[in-house]
Amino acid sequence: DIVMTQSPSSLAVSAGETVTINCKSSQSLLYSGNQKNYLAWYQQKPGQSPKLLIYWASTRQSGVPDRFIGSGSGTDFTLTISSVQAEDLAIYYCQQYYDTLTFGSGTKLEIK
Amino acid sequence: EVKLVESGGGLLKPGGSLKLSCVASGFTFSNYWMHWVRQAPGKGLEWIGEIEYDGTETNYAPSIKDRFTISRDNAKNTLYLQMSSVRSEDTATYFCTLWHQGLDYWGQGVMVTVSS
Image (cartoon, rainbow over all chains, first blue to last red; front, side, top):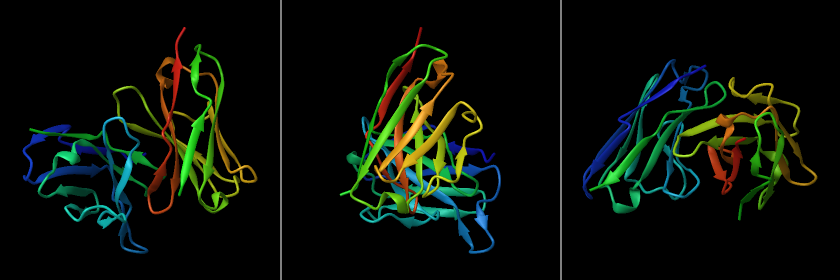
């Protein structure tokens, strides 16, 4: 099974700052056949169901603000949130879909 | 508008069985793989399993295999999760989700509590 490791587990920032969340997979998520990374990011706000933010490691889902940026390849991935806003208070999860599905343990983002 | 509505949750004793349902609307149900994901209270997301368009293929998380069964009825636009031999650690909110480019759409979730 592919294990997803996220860091940090939580962080607190002030509005307007930039946040970086890391996600590492136990094996490469890059498929040589199409050169795509099978990695998605989700946002779960308090009391809500998760929401898909990014797929193929860097493609934003329709309607997701461009301050959410996914990057990385192979086994190391990053979700960057630039100019964080109060509404970004949430837990963020990475997920691999290279081999069935596995979620990371989540990163809780708090706004100071 | 895509809607996924779970039902069937509740309180059950260890070793018991329960069947969850998820009624889908707003899209062509038979065109999509469907998934179940759960979340224990205060914990992260755990993928349970998936089912192919016509139900011929299913895959499960290793922690779930042989205790839970995913099925679907495309004529009724309904996804099911049959839970058996439940344990206290199965206590969670269970979400029905649709796979398109990721898990694009989620239901509101249904709570299952396993307790003696």
